[in-house]
Amino acid sequence: MVLNTLPVTIRVTPSDARVMIDGQPADLSKAVLMEPGTHRVRVEKEGFRTVEQEITPTVDRILFEFSMERVQMALLRIVTVPGNATVLLDGVDVGRTDAVGVLELFRFPGSYRIGASLSGFTAAERQVMVNETGSNEARITLERNTGTLTLRVIPTTAVIRVNQQVVNATQPLNLPPGPQWIEISAEFHDPYVEDVTIIRNQTLERSITLTAHKGSLLVTVAPSTALVRLADVNEREVQAWTGASSIPDLVAGRYSLHVSADGYQAQTVPITIQKDESTQQRVELSAGATTETLPIADSKPCIGVTDIDGNTYKTVQIGTQCWMAENLKTSKYWDGSPIPNVRNNREWRLLTTGAWATYDNSAANNATYGKLYNWYAVADARNVCPTGWHVPSDAEWTVLADLLGTDVGYKMKSTKGWDNNGSIASGFTGLPGGLRNPNLPWNTVHSSGFFWSSTQNDTDNAWSRLLNFDSRDLKRVNSAKTLGYSVRCLRD
Image 1: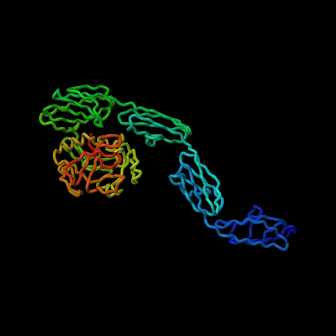
Image 2: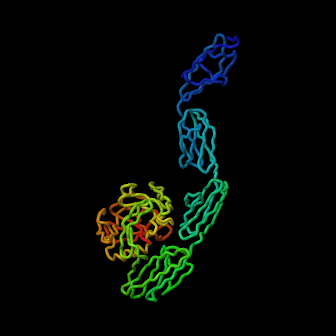
Image 3: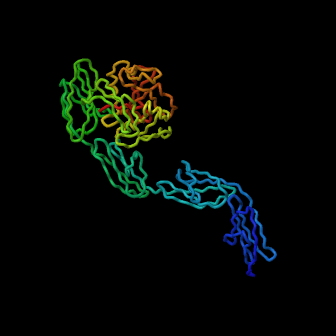
């Protein structure tokens, strides 16, 4: 034994507490050799009050005992700006702050390292001491690590992708600094691509107008005195004239020709103008009372059709229109892009982009009634219907009603599934799939069937059709675009 050290015995309660002597870990399984003089002993253990004390061993005193007091956990309130940040405590993920930036935890008194991170922001951390009493709050403000991209695109129905991801550019986009690849496309328009560089805390603005395709249209009519009105897909008049006409440089897209003359049956003919093509259309009116019919533009038979998910649909010829005889079930646009399934009412209510749901979020209802779509999915340029098909316009629904004449709703209903069944006389097989109203409980299945048209009425509303259990009519309804309705597709 070295004569200038003393064999000191240290006992602690609880026995597994950590002991530091002069800042160095001590092994208490044997006597600790200590030089004469004063030494600082620290005893610590989670859940107990730390003991820190000076001792002076002598020949007459080589035994020291320490007893720790148990302490309770204290509330630690972590606040991040902004909220929804991921929080790490001593490197361990302990959850996320809520929307207002608060996460509350119970921890034993002591020192902790708190970190916070959120996509688009620079991660940050700080040290915090949790005390037994008083307020224990740690606040971390994250600095944004993004720049802003503002896009103004014409047409507004264009599909916008940033780094191959579809985005909603109605609001400014917060993007990480660095190069970003923009792709913009719309049916009947040339695509646009650009490689831009986003700079932190700066706003980059782009106003982009896609170049529209153009074709030409040659219309001849009989009688030659017939009035012709050319309308776009929203039934807005593009041009009107009498007799034959040639229109060069007509913007490509879908149109309808409304032809009428006194003493003749009026007709509405759908046409599609393609890029650099000349479309010729002859319309011969039949003598008689004025009624509006919709001839099919080609001689293809009205046979079944399959959507991009592989769902196959029966079809029905009604007059000269070819309709799906079942409600649409697809979960994708025709280009393969997914249509989000939004189950939460609050999220659905705030949407300004396409989404679908099933009645009561039930897969069984999907099998029977198909999906319910908001109008934004209907209006999306990627087309919710199979290629060669489209969501009918308000005018095309009117044509269907005119073709069926009286008791239209009764003729359109299925003979099964309704509280008050229909006749199925038309073969349309209308189903009471109900609707999704995010402000009301589910309660309309078996009693009502709502169907979108592609025609909007104003910024917030669009035209639709309603079959109701207690009515023999097909009702025209001005509906909020946020509602979820069934979709029937009509062949181009």
